[in-house]
Image (cartoon, rainbow, N blue to C red; front, side):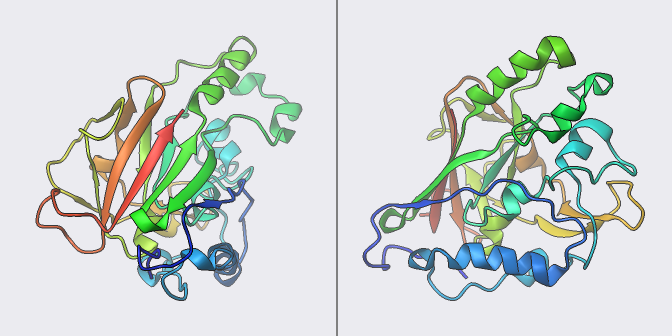
Length: 272
Protein backbone atom coordinates (compact mmCIF):
# COMPACT_ATOMS: atom_id res chain seq x y z
CA UNK A 1 0.00 0.00 0.00
CA UNK A 2 1.36 3.43 -0.90
CA UNK A 3 0.28 6.99 -1.40
CA UNK A 4 -0.37 7.73 -5.08
CA UNK A 5 2.57 9.26 -6.91
CA UNK A 6 2.89 11.47 -9.97
CA UNK A 7 1.01 8.92 -12.13
CA UNK A 8 -2.24 9.70 -10.30
CA UNK A 9 -4.25 12.02 -12.57
CA UNK A 10 -6.40 14.96 -11.59
CA UNK A 11 -5.05 15.76 -8.11
CA UNK A 12 -3.02 18.98 -7.81
CA UNK A 13 -3.32 19.72 -4.09
CA UNK A 14 -5.32 17.79 -1.55
CA UNK A 15 -6.25 18.91 1.97
CA UNK A 16 -6.94 16.11 4.46
CA UNK A 17 -9.29 16.88 7.38
CA UNK A 18 -7.51 16.54 10.71
CA UNK A 19 -9.11 14.32 13.33
CA UNK A 20 -9.25 15.20 17.04
CA UNK A 21 -8.23 12.62 19.66
CA UNK A 22 -10.75 9.97 20.67
CA UNK A 23 -11.05 7.49 23.50
CA UNK A 24 -10.16 4.06 22.09
CA UNK A 25 -10.28 2.22 25.41
CA UNK A 26 -11.63 -1.33 25.29
CA UNK A 27 -12.61 -1.26 21.62
CA UNK A 28 -11.88 -4.40 19.64
CA UNK A 29 -9.00 -4.54 17.19
CA UNK A 30 -11.53 -4.88 14.36
CA UNK A 31 -13.38 -1.75 15.50
CA UNK A 32 -10.19 0.27 15.75
CA UNK A 33 -8.86 -0.77 12.34
CA UNK A 34 -12.28 -0.19 10.76
CA UNK A 35 -12.22 3.42 12.00
CA UNK A 36 -8.75 3.91 10.56
CA UNK A 37 -9.65 2.24 7.26
CA UNK A 38 -12.71 4.45 6.82
CA UNK A 39 -10.57 7.55 7.29
CA UNK A 40 -8.06 6.39 4.69
CA UNK A 41 -10.73 5.30 2.21
CA UNK A 42 -12.42 8.70 2.47
CA UNK A 43 -9.54 10.00 0.31
CA UNK A 44 -9.58 7.57 -2.66
CA UNK A 45 -7.96 10.11 -5.00
CA UNK A 46 -4.79 9.85 -2.92
CA UNK A 47 -4.53 6.07 -2.91
CA UNK A 48 -2.42 4.04 -5.31
CA UNK A 49 -4.38 0.87 -4.49
CA UNK A 50 -6.84 -0.51 -1.97
CA UNK A 51 -5.92 0.22 1.64
CA UNK A 52 -5.19 -2.76 3.85
CA UNK A 53 -3.75 -2.02 7.32
CA UNK A 54 -0.22 -3.37 7.64
CA UNK A 55 0.03 -6.48 9.78
CA UNK A 56 3.64 -5.65 10.69
CA UNK A 57 2.46 -2.33 12.14
CA UNK A 58 -0.91 -3.29 13.66
CA UNK A 59 -0.87 -7.07 13.94
CA UNK A 60 0.12 -7.02 17.63
CA UNK A 61 -2.80 -4.82 18.76
CA UNK A 62 -5.01 -6.69 21.21
CA UNK A 63 -8.78 -6.76 21.51
CA UNK A 64 -10.60 -4.80 24.19
CA UNK A 65 -7.52 -3.30 25.81
CA UNK A 66 -7.13 0.21 27.25
CA UNK A 67 -4.74 2.78 25.83
CA UNK A 68 -2.51 5.38 27.45
CA UNK A 69 -4.75 8.44 27.90
CA UNK A 70 -3.84 12.07 27.35
CA UNK A 71 -4.83 12.84 30.93
CA UNK A 72 -3.08 9.74 32.21
CA UNK A 73 0.14 10.64 30.42
CA UNK A 74 -0.01 14.33 31.35
CA UNK A 75 -1.12 14.10 34.98
CA UNK A 76 -1.22 10.67 36.60
CA UNK A 77 1.56 8.55 35.11
CA UNK A 78 1.71 4.76 35.06
CA UNK A 79 -0.90 3.02 37.14
CA UNK A 80 -4.67 2.72 37.40
CA UNK A 81 -5.30 6.27 36.11
CA UNK A 82 -2.96 6.03 33.12
CA UNK A 83 -5.82 5.29 30.73
CA UNK A 84 -7.90 8.37 31.58
CA UNK A 85 -8.86 10.85 28.86
CA UNK A 86 -8.78 10.51 25.09
CA UNK A 87 -6.17 8.04 23.88
CA UNK A 88 -2.89 9.84 23.31
CA UNK A 89 -1.96 7.59 20.38
CA UNK A 90 -5.20 8.52 18.59
CA UNK A 91 -3.51 11.80 17.58
CA UNK A 92 -1.50 9.73 15.10
CA UNK A 93 -3.60 6.60 14.61
CA UNK A 94 -6.71 8.59 13.61
CA UNK A 95 -4.72 10.82 11.24
CA UNK A 96 -3.39 7.95 9.12
CA UNK A 97 -2.41 10.13 6.15
CA UNK A 98 -0.15 12.18 8.40
CA UNK A 99 2.79 10.03 7.35
CA UNK A 100 5.13 11.51 9.97
CA UNK A 101 3.86 13.35 13.05
CA UNK A 102 5.49 15.22 15.91
CA UNK A 103 5.08 14.39 19.59
CA UNK A 104 6.06 17.32 21.79
CA UNK A 105 7.92 16.78 25.07
CA UNK A 106 4.97 17.92 27.21
CA UNK A 107 5.62 15.53 30.09
CA UNK A 108 5.74 16.14 33.85
CA UNK A 109 5.02 19.85 33.49
CA UNK A 110 1.81 20.10 35.55
CA UNK A 111 1.13 20.57 39.23
CA UNK A 112 -1.46 17.81 39.58
CA UNK A 113 -2.70 19.20 42.90
CA UNK A 114 -4.00 22.23 40.99
CA UNK A 115 -5.90 20.31 38.29
CA UNK A 116 -9.65 20.97 38.47
CA UNK A 117 -12.71 19.13 37.20
CA UNK A 118 -13.12 21.94 34.67
CA UNK A 119 -9.61 21.25 33.36
CA UNK A 120 -10.41 17.56 32.99
CA UNK A 121 -13.66 18.36 31.16
CA UNK A 122 -12.02 20.86 28.80
CA UNK A 123 -11.63 19.26 25.33
CA UNK A 124 -9.14 22.00 24.38
CA UNK A 125 -6.78 21.55 27.33
CA UNK A 126 -3.21 21.76 25.95
CA UNK A 127 -2.02 18.24 26.67
CA UNK A 128 0.24 18.13 23.63
CA UNK A 129 0.56 19.32 20.05
CA UNK A 130 -2.25 18.54 17.61
CA UNK A 131 -2.04 18.76 13.82
CA UNK A 132 -3.84 21.77 12.38
CA UNK A 133 -3.57 20.88 8.69
CA UNK A 134 -2.45 18.02 6.45
CA UNK A 135 -1.89 18.51 2.72
CA UNK A 136 -0.52 16.58 -0.25
CA UNK A 137 0.82 17.48 -3.68
CA UNK A 138 0.72 14.05 -5.38
CA UNK A 139 2.39 15.16 -8.61
CA UNK A 140 5.47 16.15 -6.61
CA UNK A 141 5.20 13.23 -4.15
CA UNK A 142 5.15 15.75 -1.30
CA UNK A 143 2.99 15.97 1.81
CA UNK A 144 3.03 18.11 4.94
CA UNK A 145 1.57 18.48 8.39
CA UNK A 146 1.40 21.75 10.34
CA UNK A 147 1.41 22.17 14.12
CA UNK A 148 0.55 25.52 15.74
CA UNK A 149 3.31 25.28 18.34
CA UNK A 150 3.45 29.03 19.05
CA UNK A 151 -0.27 29.00 19.92
CA UNK A 152 0.29 25.93 22.09
CA UNK A 153 3.10 27.65 23.96
CA UNK A 154 0.87 30.69 24.53
CA UNK A 155 -1.79 28.42 26.04
CA UNK A 156 0.82 27.04 28.43
CA UNK A 157 1.86 30.55 29.44
CA UNK A 158 -1.74 31.41 30.34
CA UNK A 159 -1.85 28.42 32.70
CA UNK A 160 1.59 28.91 34.19
CA UNK A 161 0.60 30.80 37.35
CA UNK A 162 -2.41 28.67 38.23
CA UNK A 163 -0.99 25.25 37.40
CA UNK A 164 2.70 26.04 37.95
CA UNK A 165 3.81 24.64 34.61
CA UNK A 166 7.44 23.60 34.56
CA UNK A 167 9.60 24.96 31.76
CA UNK A 168 8.86 22.91 28.64
CA UNK A 169 11.78 21.86 26.46
CA UNK A 170 11.68 22.66 22.72
CA UNK A 171 11.95 18.94 22.01
CA UNK A 172 9.85 16.48 20.07
CA UNK A 173 9.87 12.96 18.69
CA UNK A 174 8.93 11.86 15.20
CA UNK A 175 6.13 9.29 14.97
CA UNK A 176 6.33 7.56 11.60
CA UNK A 177 4.38 4.30 11.81
CA UNK A 178 1.80 5.82 9.46
CA UNK A 179 4.52 6.03 6.80
CA UNK A 180 5.49 2.43 7.51
CA UNK A 181 1.84 1.40 7.16
CA UNK A 182 1.86 2.86 3.64
CA UNK A 183 5.01 1.04 2.62
CA UNK A 184 7.67 3.63 3.42
CA UNK A 185 10.19 1.84 5.59
CA UNK A 186 13.17 4.23 5.66
CA UNK A 187 13.40 7.85 6.82
CA UNK A 188 15.98 10.62 6.88
CA UNK A 189 15.68 14.20 8.12
CA UNK A 190 17.73 16.36 5.77
CA UNK A 191 19.55 18.89 7.99
CA UNK A 192 20.38 21.20 5.07
CA UNK A 193 16.82 21.47 3.79
CA UNK A 194 15.26 21.63 7.26
CA UNK A 195 14.81 24.98 9.01
CA UNK A 196 15.48 25.61 12.72
CA UNK A 197 15.55 21.86 13.39
CA UNK A 198 18.26 19.79 15.05
CA UNK A 199 18.48 16.05 15.59
CA UNK A 200 20.42 15.24 18.74
CA UNK A 201 21.14 11.82 17.25
CA UNK A 202 21.71 12.87 13.63
CA UNK A 203 22.57 9.98 11.36
CA UNK A 204 24.40 10.12 8.07
CA UNK A 205 22.22 7.32 6.73
CA UNK A 206 18.50 6.61 6.56
CA UNK A 207 16.80 5.19 9.64
CA UNK A 208 14.59 2.13 9.43
CA UNK A 209 11.07 2.87 10.68
CA UNK A 210 10.51 0.05 13.15
CA UNK A 211 7.64 1.63 15.08
CA UNK A 212 4.59 -0.58 15.52
CA UNK A 213 1.54 -0.95 17.75
CA UNK A 214 1.25 -3.61 20.43
CA UNK A 215 -0.03 -4.24 23.94
CA UNK A 216 2.69 -3.33 26.43
CA UNK A 217 3.05 -2.82 30.15
CA UNK A 218 4.41 0.75 30.31
CA UNK A 219 1.02 2.14 31.38
CA UNK A 220 1.04 0.09 34.58
CA UNK A 221 -2.62 -0.80 34.08
CA UNK A 222 -3.52 -4.46 34.78
CA UNK A 223 -3.15 -6.47 31.58
CA UNK A 224 -1.30 -3.71 29.74
CA UNK A 225 -2.31 -1.10 27.17
CA UNK A 226 -2.17 -0.79 23.41
CA UNK A 227 0.60 1.65 22.54
CA UNK A 228 3.57 2.26 20.23
CA UNK A 229 7.05 0.76 20.42
CA UNK A 230 10.05 0.83 20.21
CA UNK A 231 12.09 3.89 21.03
CA UNK A 232 14.36 4.91 18.14
CA UNK A 233 17.17 7.31 19.02
CA UNK A 234 17.31 8.97 15.59
CA UNK A 235 13.59 9.81 15.76
CA UNK A 236 13.02 10.45 19.45
CA UNK A 237 15.35 13.39 20.15
CA UNK A 238 14.49 16.22 17.78
CA UNK A 239 14.74 19.89 18.75
CA UNK A 240 13.46 23.14 17.30
CA UNK A 241 15.76 26.13 17.82
CA UNK A 242 13.25 28.81 16.79
CA UNK A 243 9.75 29.08 15.37
CA UNK A 244 8.64 28.70 12.67
CA UNK A 245 10.58 25.49 12.03
CA UNK A 246 10.38 22.75 9.42
CA UNK A 247 11.70 19.18 9.33
CA UNK A 248 12.37 18.09 5.75
CA UNK A 249 11.83 14.33 5.80
CA UNK A 250 12.69 11.93 3.00
CA UNK A 251 10.94 8.56 2.85
CA UNK A 252 11.90 5.45 0.91
CA UNK A 253 10.11 2.15 0.41
CA UNK A 254 13.39 0.23 0.23
CA UNK A 255 16.70 0.96 1.93
CA UNK A 256 18.51 3.64 -0.09
CA UNK A 257 22.16 3.20 -0.96
CA UNK A 258 22.67 6.72 0.38
CA UNK A 259 20.56 9.66 1.49
CA UNK A 260 21.35 11.24 -1.88
CA UNK A 261 19.01 8.73 -3.54
CA UNK A 262 15.76 10.25 -4.78
CA UNK A 263 13.10 9.60 -2.12
CA UNK A 264 9.79 7.93 -2.90
CA UNK A 265 8.02 10.60 -0.85
CA UNK A 266 8.96 13.85 0.85
CA UNK A 267 7.04 14.81 3.97
CA UNK A 268 7.36 18.15 5.76
CA UNK A 269 6.64 18.64 9.45
CA UNK A 270 6.03 22.35 10.01
CA UNK A 271 6.05 23.87 13.49
CA UNK A 272 4.52 27.33 13.37
